[in-house]
Image (tube, rainbow, N blue to C red; front, side, top):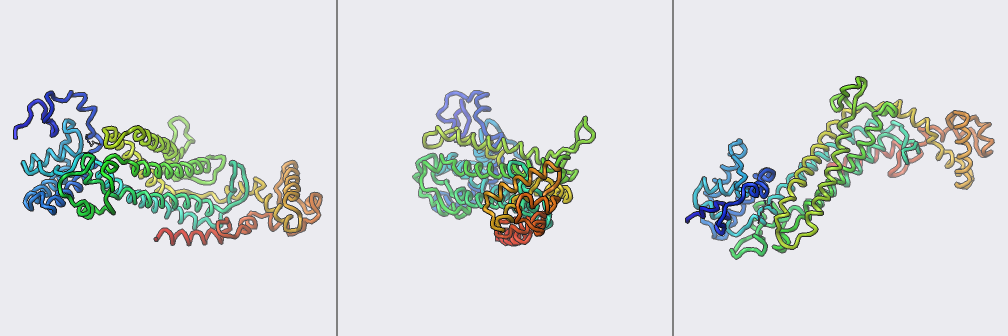
Length: 464
Ligand code: ARG
């Protein structure tokens, strides 16, 4: 066949002019989509085998294509493949190389498909793998949190609302709250993967193909759970990517909240924890500084993942069916979300075991904030005082304690009696931090016994 000399692209037949050099650069995606090479080749091999299975390719043609593609993958992995901008994207770079390598038979690979269903398939294959890798990092981080919680079931710290000391809690309980956030995140990814793992291949450009393809056969080879139901939807749907980035934004938001706490806790004012030197940096001017860079960066990177979610939603909102070149813009936000999320989880899973806990500082902080005031109110209620009255009485006792600059537990019984005559010596049991936390002894409560039970349930959940 004679090649059009004016335009030598794989699609150049109907063109009288070559592509403008800047337009070539502007429209190409090879700069970022080459990372899909493995999935592109896997999809092409499965497609060729299916074409052979239905009799569109002979055994010899299929074999030659499969060998050619396998060799190309080796070349890429050895760093011996030069990606070309003029070949636009990963699909045409690989296809052109295949034709170079095995000759005219390589031109048969693209029978019955289009780059539109090809790219939709590639991203799904890619994302499926990445979701598995991300799930592993979540598990590793959760394991680190479980180990920490297990060591700190008895450690008492102030629990906060409005960032004001509220009631004492155990550190183990606080850490298990982080675990719960990640548990929902892991479940969301499992659910998202169900909609990722559906095969669009066979939709071709938009309407399907006139070849007698067997989509179920290809899907089986590629380990997809099922095939898409509608060809127009198949080439244009990017919901699965948006859904993933949305789940990723939630994970980053959770990591960012944990980061905020670690940053506060490692300040000299809190002094609850010390983050290991390997995860911090110093200041070039202030010699005393040790900065919590890792949590700060994770908090910062949350912004860019949120941005990617908005990018993708905006990318899709104005598109008519079916495929539009706009969709090429889905890759960079998606890839950067995967990289940012995976790295953030990775560094967190490494950092958590290297955090030193200052138990005394935590306990002293809990002692300072009148954090057992609710326990005193509950004590009065148990002695027959109505809760609203008890609240008022304790409020006055706290005001008295503040004015006389002492803790609730340091108020003498005779002084307590001036607030309520039902108060007896046993009040001091409920005013202790230990008494306060161990009294919250029900599923979901902060009592050490309950935290241990929650850890046991979590260990079971992580194994399933
Ligand atoms: N690079 C394109 C993308 O990322 C591949 C599909 C191109 N299809 C087309 N008809 N131009 O979406």
